[in-house]
Length: 396
Image 1 (cartoon, rainbow, N blue to C red):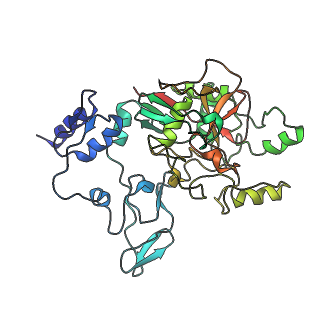
Image 2: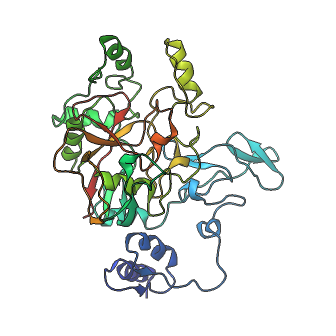
């Protein structure tokens, strides 16, 4: 049987919704990836000694594959940057007779072979197979605990409850200024605001915060669109064949099934993980006559918004970027109290006065705001400099 035929049979066996069954032959890497989409898939045990992830990927000597590298070969201590298409960060360990030089290991005056991008097998084809867009990730669905237990979060996050979701697709990054402009040029979207719209702001407050709106600034194409209200965000997603994610979809995409505290795990926030208010934000505030607090002491490199995907080490379990920090994100749901009852495809109340926002923004100084379970809310007509969105769609 040809290699192509064997792979096709393996994919069909793993994706089948029937009772648990072993994958065909030794296509264990493919079956393992598909098991995330269909938990009933039971990969056949590998024959022979187990190989390390780096060996399976064929990484150059000394390089490795880790959670931070997103399936790519990088030096120890590095993370994969989708923005730069390369491994970034100073290596923490180099091969014998080599030393750290910038973002590389250099041996005897000559560069050691640079990290070779090796895509994760099946992940992209699987996304195509279910109809996800080019900048979207397939979220496999499943049952998870939503919210926080008493004493481990705000009251609005309680009671914890189980939700079950079907597979769906979600944008890997927040919608950028450039992407939003295309929608405006097509006539399907309104121009984003160049001013904020917030009840309770004085004219002075509005003028101050409006300087951070990204719309109309030539150097912000790769930054998230902000200063958009809920209807603008909803219209963009619908114009592009999607919708805003439900609050449950957003939380599951951010924390997965393991109940982690933050998208990247349980490590406290820091400047390599997200764009929030660090020393750079505090200094910028001082220069404008403001006294701001910081979430962490070091600089994350960006005074306000950053280009989307700039913090690969902070990726969620499914590889989504900026699920904490940069800008808060509108969701589809009205805000309402949680129920303790388990539900399939949970959504918020049928009506309300405020829509849920999630994730925290670039000026956030309280670490609790960037927890995966934290719930924010705003009037649908509000436009903030720290509020944007990403889109979702059902898996076809």
